[in-house]
Image 1 (cartoon, helix red, strand yellow):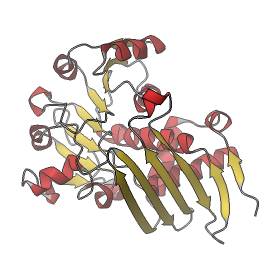
Image 2: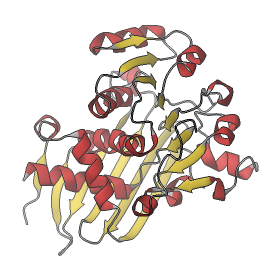
Image 3: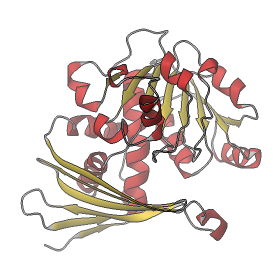
Image 4: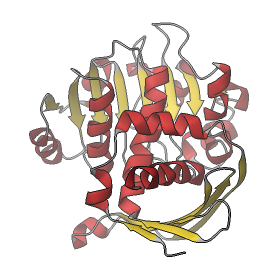
Length: 304
């Protein structure tokens, strides 16, 4: 079998955000046979290898390198490689651009949750973090919430202004508290280890989407935010005891595992849903390899 090579630009031209969320939802109807993560650390640098196998979708191995010092070198923080293997033979079926899979998996993961948990009439959306993922979120949320107005906050006001200039209906914010209090959806993708989003700022009916934390020492929201919201994750197995957002709060007794209402395995039962217009929902995007596999298979289907 000669593997198919899917580059970023030509691959992305065939994709649709809403279609991807439906593919992710359908993927969770299938049997997840195996899932594994390996983390290696060198100071602030991280190498993360993820693998998954799902009946009907095949297998995937994705290795990501996260080097926070790369922007100073003019290079992306995150790099890596994605290999997709045949469901029937295990042969290498496709090599898909790492950044293409990562962009669409990461934002698509959050968008699926927002389509289930945010109020349908949400029209004010705050993006926290003006990096690469923030731009993906602007495209994804813009597709699902047409007519929405966006606000962007970043530690560096200059970066927020530059981000806002790239998109219509998008304006920079200088004060994070004011920005959080004034929107329907907060989606955050930062590299912070100390919580930026305070629970005291949250308003009834909001949906909070946390993406940035991926290490055991990283958090974007404080304890009060976790205690005030109904909590959801994409997969309990890859978030609860692995990512600081929840791991730290669990270890300190701030929350218990039963406080996590549902993950995507509960999509078919109806548990992964908002119950009322005024409740606060909070979703932690952990982005396991099973989601990379579902996304890669979707990309290959559109390429074919």
